[in-house]
Image (cartoon, rainbow, N blue to C red):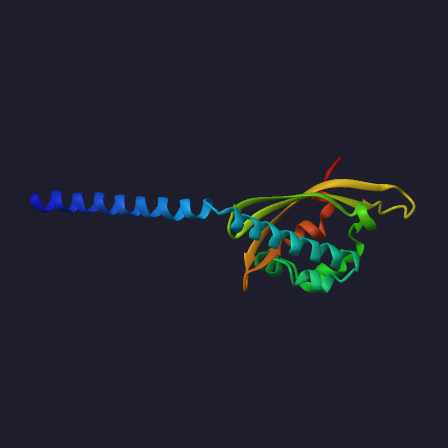
Length: 162
């Protein structure tokens, strides 16, 4: 009988230790200093602006390298490049991107929301069409921010038109 009580106490003690460890680990992830938040936000925005610049220059092969691991496994480089050639075109100059916001989910994952301008695909002389997109970005390989390629490739499906 006594060994049964000891075993139950050990199990509860172990569960308590695991609970305390879990709370410590998760609270550290969510409690970021203002400097850490600025570093995360600026890193994600810098990468996003690089991707937008490459998109405008139609350097789709270089955009592919900014894709997160999962999307690069799902979409081949050749399929991505050929799809981008017929995908939506970004608007020129100041209409390309506005109102960028970053929501930090964890130190290695953010949601970047941006109002983006697209050239209407059917008519080069038509007005710019604006839409709001939310991109999930993750910190991978050598502390580099990556983006889901399908959100870029299939942008009209992910746009909330304003």
